Image (cartoon, rainbow, N blue to C red; front, side, top):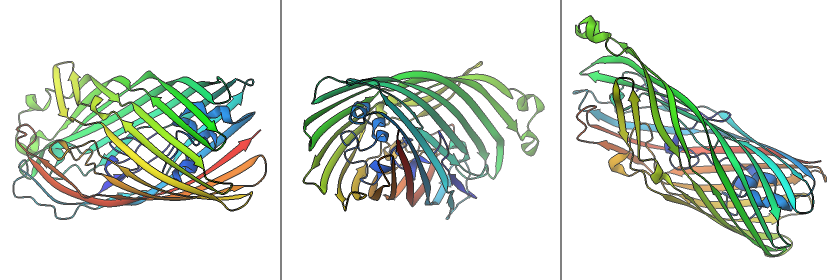
Length: 421
């Protein structure tokens, strides 16, 4: 493998093994919350970017507000010790992984209609994935390129039922675009130089939120983002190198181009949080988020000539736990810290080179500067330490056995601006 690229851009994509969250979930929607490793993201409501996890919190912000976030992702991941029964005699002891410094933005806007109702809209990229291998690497049968991007627009309405309770609901309108590529090795020669599958679709889910304030210092929150069931439609194309193996021309033209469909479900996310002001300067918070990855059972691709490909995932539901604290230095400055543990939904038996995921530990810090009553700025940094992971696929007659190992770390640098109209 010459290189394994990881990059993130607007509305899209991230190498899930070493990125900000489990599977191909992205967790960079709020720079302020990132400073606490997203502890209290469901209950904090410190600015309107927290509404991604709980839209009920926007009732705490009077008037009109706009918030823009941008997170740069960098770091490294390395693969090594790769062997495959589909490419006998080949061994790759070092597979360099390059992580480009790319920006992931998100945006928020809220407007208080009256004392009880507040409207808001969110633009975000909740899921994304890219793994990009060279076409000739030993695991080409199992994937050379995986590029999945989601783009979300979420309008919400929040209702303040009384002084303590706020409720919210909305729709998440999600567009997904996917490109998958495979090679098929035959000894040291590729049978298929490139088999490319592309598809996209637009589907709708919903979001719910609730917040209860026991007093001005203590509050709890719950947020729920539903799964979105997608049926992608597109095409698959083959670029055959039949002449290299002496294959007949008839074989090389059998499956050059097909229309395909594929079902893919982005999972539901349940968030529970608590926030407490100890005094005028110190605050503590905690969060538990469950991602229902069990809905992502397999990726089945149907062509106009019947079943084309099945990748069994068998992912499991997982939790993200975090704790944090913040300290208000004065009326302008606040600092944040946080620690989190993020579980992987992938077991070793089903881990693939498309998503060689592993458990992660988050270490986060952040700072807030209130310039005046209108402008507030936040900065944050997170170091994500990923556990080593192993791909060990056996008894795969169609693609061959594959063994490879991965290790690495990721760094997140975030900046946001909030404006009160």
